[in-house]
Amino acid sequence: MQTFRAYLQDAAGVITWAAWIEAANRDDAQGQALALCPGQSPHLDLWSATERKLEASARLDPV
Image 1: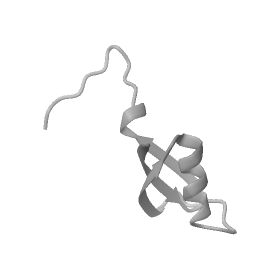
Image 2: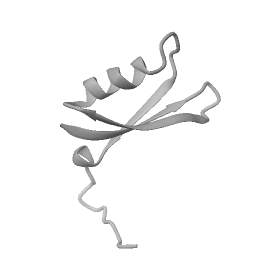
Image 3: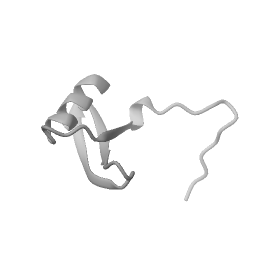
Image 4: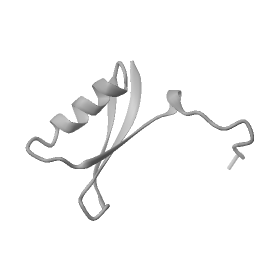
């Protein structure tokens, strides 16, 4: 299982809802997130730390 962070945005691009979702893969997470808002077709962003990929030139600095 992976942990995803789901962000739903309205037509104006305002985040209206966010939640942590446990799912086997990205498609499952997307289905779970969209099932929480039936009858709507919001813009959905999914983030997963385990799938995060950085370019070779990128680096993360400690905070």
